[in-house]
Length: 163
Image (tube, rainbow, N blue to C red):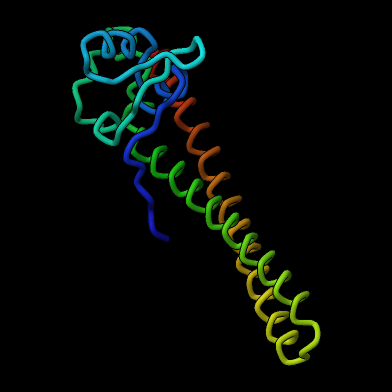
């Protein structure tokens, strides 16, 4: 499967913190220092997160408390980001397959006067439905993998916080 890379995304504070593996305060300091773009969106601050920001090699400027409680999360940001992007790609593929299936059904309705066209359209619709089902299954597998990774990250973070 091809992994799609997002150029950038405007995310609310909580999502940006999660994606970057930093605290809210660190994110605010970054914005104040100009290290990350931020803007007001209907009374809420959103942050422009790019692939550069999600790099674990980037200096995070975190507090000692963050370093103590989130290294597992920070180390897994690329993996979680990759899984999220794969899930998003799978979702887009499913939506695309559903659209194509709807178009095929519409064409079949228009072509009901010619049995050969109808038969071909039914074959195409069945193929597209199989693609859609495959995309759904793939999306479900990726969602399950993300949930497992998230649980692992939480468990590791708790273990590190205790030590």
